[in-house]
Amino acid sequence: MKIKQNSEVKEVEVALEGTKGMRKRVLIGYDDGSKNIIMRYFTLLPGGYSERHSHSHEHLVNIESGKGIVVDKDGNEIEVSEGHNIFVEPDELHQFQNPFEKNFEFVCVIPNIDKR
Amino acid sequence: MKIKQNSEVKEVEVALEGTKGMRKRVLIGYDDGSKNIIMRYFTLLPGGYSERHSHSHEHLVNIESGKGIVVDKDGNEIEVSEGHNIFVEPDELHQFQNPFEKNFEFVCVIPNIDKR
Image 1 (cartoon, rainbow over the protein chains, first blue to last red):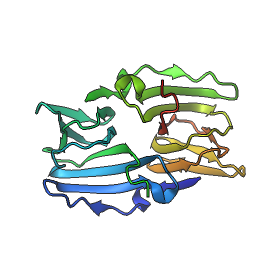
Image 2 (image 1 turned 135 degrees about the vertical axis):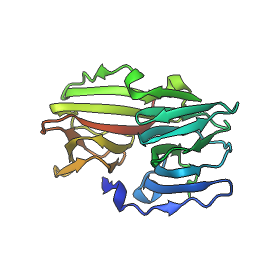
Image 3 (image 1 turned 30 degrees about the vertical axis):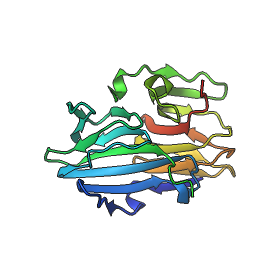
């Protein structure tokens, strides 16, 4: 068993092209012994956004704090806030945006795509 | 893409032997198209506890609200609260307890053990 606080986990800037003001913590991952699933914590700063992209792995998202916009594959912009859950299918185009004044924070779970 | 609020998801009492005051919501699961991972939301009422047990699947837990006790395989009782993450390994004996006065709520992610 491994137990740690979010705040104990190193936060890194996500430096992908097309991404702005996005920070990531790997809450539980391979280094913790989790072979099948990775649990990450993202913070989108005001004005921040993730890359608009798709990939072969799905996302399971639970909004923790603040509010933001999810853009779906058709370009629809859906406002989400604390307590919302979002399932992004494999290969589905998506983007997260924070046009608001407070941090937009969410847990995002994916299969362990880096089996090592 | 599927989007829903925690409160929109039906809450059911967990009626396992050895479990008391435990409620579950499947936030994202097979019915949402998630083939690899299930995201659940548990509420342990004051005085409630989960079964002390082990199983072949792991747990990835993020505490959302309140505080509680996690009992590890050696019987150690560790207090956890909002923002704590717990990784329970496959086949590791564990139990969650809420001896406190407020609800103890957490997200618990598992691999999809019911592939259907």
